[in-house]
Length: 161
Image 1 (cartoon, rainbow, N blue to C red):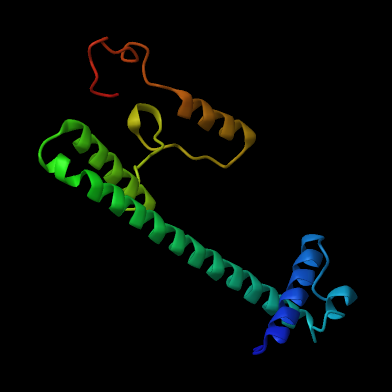
Image 2 (cartoon, rainbow, N blue to C red):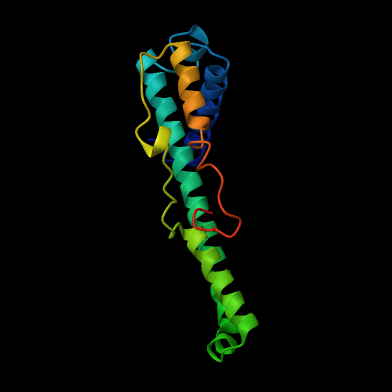
């Protein structure tokens, strides 16, 4: 593992060249990749994985810092309107709720909305052998809204909206 800044810069440059070559579709055992200093196909592959993990870790750290800064901003805004909201001022209450909603979204606190694909009359989606005709049949089934007589709702019925 590199220790000096010069060694780290050398590794970063080699990995950048490796990534560039791989993006062009060059195989790991190609002489151009081995010329970068890799002893084998396996060594090049492992180094690419390390490079991707490092990039992911750096990105994750940046996201964490961003999330922390946004939470601090939300804290300051919440503090500015909290007393008014507790006193019952409706605009302040609305602002607090919006800030709380933003915080929940930022931190992934809300449960995901469950969605489900069902077949005719809410039953299971029938699966076949995967032929084109079967796929088209599934697409048509998924597009059905039910029987013609129960497809329309009363104008005042909001139960399914």
